[in-house]
Image (cartoon, rainbow, N blue to C red; front, side):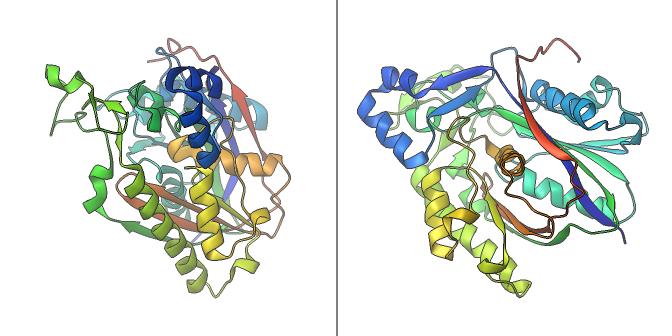
Length: 357
């Protein structure tokens, strides 16, 4: 068995911004001030119509290669975690192998997960490297959820932003990954769903694009993202604390033993309420959503990178990553953070989607 470390993280933000003032003009100041106060989100990053998740991931990967001197020839595993791929087939990872000029000997595949994509993906990559099958992996993750939103659905438009991240994982004599827990409840799948989006219910009918009011002032069609905010909040409040406390109990640890908790950046209220429930002091929680929004599955990657840039991560610190969302699914990961981390940084577009397949 081998150890695995997180060697570096980079992320790419689209240039477009959806401001609080713009939404106040669309929906009214009173309602938007209330939503912003609850979520802690005052601005969102929005990709333009020509920019896909893969374009953001391409920017993050190129930043990884240039900033940290990573050799493409050393990459033997490429994983792309997303729910907004370029196509249903082929996998976006295969397209990115050619676009990034990675070796043809690389193994490449997609992971189809939403809000839990990053914590699941790093756990999967860790297992593959620890088994001895691979030495160095490039994990790309991200989504462009704003492309799935109806502009008149204030509950969703006010939340989501677009981003992609690149994470380098490689063999290490010091294993970073200690333990992880998982959970799934498919009975709640319709609480967060893009209804007419696949082969079960396609977008071919005219009815798919007809927006209707759900009764609370939000308008959605069947081809738009549907989210039951109350159900998702209740689910998150329950499962986030359960998974984190189970992870700590299983490893004979308490909250005081953990240096930093990085949770899926769904909203400030749910993060702070869950932290209070678990007795986690505010200084052990890192937030990165005020100026970029809820960026879905890669919010943990961006928050982890931002925490490093803010000087919150130290050698020997124990770190918990936890996420929850689409599926419904949840996951928590315990890390031993080490000082041989190369670094983290972000960049802003624009990104040209014509540069590659």
